[in-house]
Image 1 (cartoon, rainbow, N blue to C red):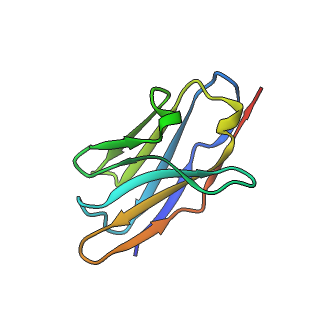
Image 2 (cartoon, one colour):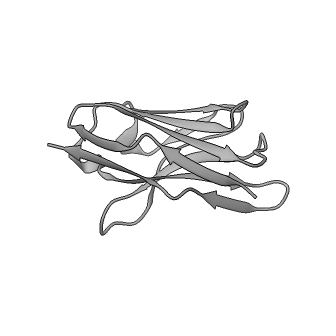
Length: 118
């Protein structure tokens, strides 16, 4: 079983930066994909960025160039550095671990609120 705890959210002015962290307890395998999703009020949850154990990354188009995902395999932690924040980035940000082997599974954190004021 994997438990995920996000931290680092808060209130920031437009143009500012925040760094989110997600610490995983339990075993994280090298094939696990760790990622960040977000959900704004009235909208569906969407992918922000993901990273494999070998460091391959994937970003949603609207986050490219502003957000950077990184992963510390020794600490079972994934980070999201968010720069040039915009009011439309306001959402609850969730951490996710997607497992492909052994067996398919996924784990979610409880989320951290990010609010960007204009």
